[in-house]
Length: 127
Image (cartoon, rainbow, N blue to C red):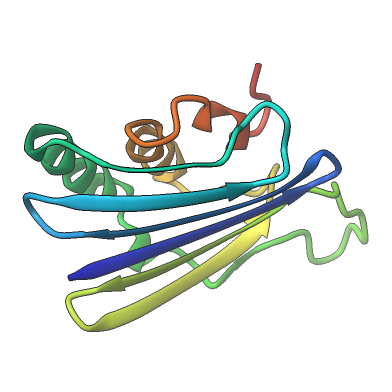
């Protein structure tokens, strides 16, 4: 079974999303200290699990760089994220700051929205 961890830290608090999934099933647990995103846990239907897998494949996390952070600006925006994916026995880790998101991050957030409806909060310039 595959495993995904998503860490998100900002001035409002922090979230830790953990899920275990395969083609037809997904169980998740969300710990959160951010008021807008309540802690939750659950399981997706088979159809939603398949959709989650589709979005994760489109996000192409194995192709992400290890770090998406400003190198020369010396400016930190106070919002940090980290994705750790164990997929088919291989581990991929990427981290960055809110304004430095990899190509495919939006598809990743679409996958997260299946479990955490307010996951748009994790995008730069979210509403």
